[in-house]
Image (tube, rainbow over all chains, first blue to last red; front, side, top):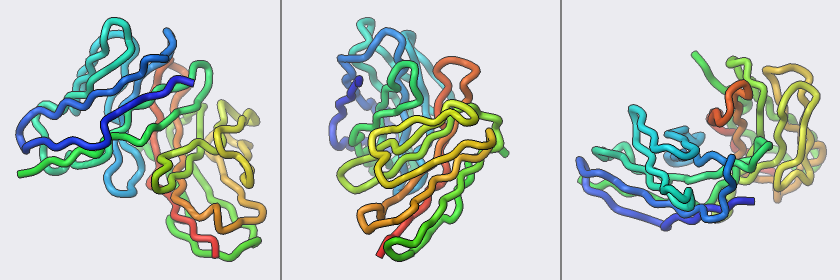
Length: 110
Length: 114
């Protein structure tokens, strides 16, 4: 199964861009990359996903390298409410199985 | 409002007393899953279902049962709960119509088995 590796924690100043990296070197050609975040013990909140191309929505941007072995989630203007654990996930092909890593704890400070 | 609803949100019970955690989604999603979350271990998938009457094991299925008799409901059954099943549980669903659709999670159920 494809696995993901993320830094354990990161800090970001409020109003600045937060760039969260993820390595997924064993990803298969038809597997998507998903990003979720979890605030305290709430249900994981979907942020964005992609296959090959870079993606942008109202919450964030996702940059996927050409070889698809890594990606970066960008929160363009971090706020205090963006403090959370961010998970980079690959779904196992042809299943509904998501493999969560331990995530990156992002702390946004004033 | 599109949502995944879990009940109960909190439950304290005793070893061996059968319990069911319900999960319902109003988005007509084909795929549904159950996860448990434990400190230091992250979220791990228990079971998933790709449609009515189609279920499969995730990473940690031991001690759990599921059923998918209707598209909207995917209950998690603990026939004989034990303390090691004390955890935070999440149900999730997604559409299977389009490839790559993300899962949407419920608010969680915190179970304590004494």
